[in-house]
Image 1 (cartoon, rainbow, N blue to C red):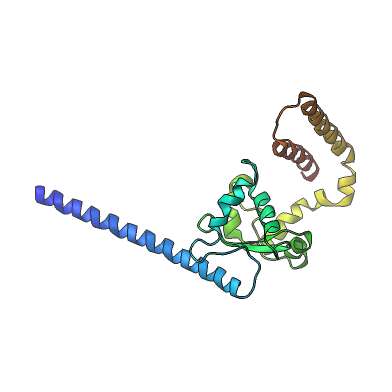
Image 2 (image 1 turned 120 degrees about the vertical axis):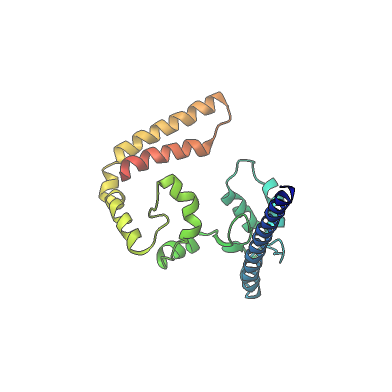
Length: 212
């Protein structure tokens, strides 16, 4: 019996070691693949902050976080980053793997228009679906492309037309008055509040009524 137990323990240990090796190998492979991708971009002269072949841009993130409020959105820290290094004012590549895949950050409206409208670039569904789909209840036009996106977008066309928007001006102004009144109340009290939550609630009330 003892010999059988030892064999089971030995087998379990070998399985655990094998799984650990496979996991570490997978992580290492993905890291090398990501860093090589950024290395090639850097060799081509693509704009990016100072980059490390091992850590990517992870080393600059702690210092950047100290310059932002603790509850600031990540996009705000990227905006600060674009002003700290020359050549990043229009857009730049950022590599903070394994926290997220490498991406190009647009910091000017012209580049954003090119990506979203002029060229209608394909959205990276694999990257977006993970955090947008749970909020949207599944696939939606923020994460889909092609015919699927067009079908979903057509459902909302009536809500985005100029005639439809003008027909909701009274309601929009009514919600705006409520929004302004809440701001005035906070100003009178002199308290600290979440502008982000307040603005999001206001926009959700307006968009939810107008678009739907």
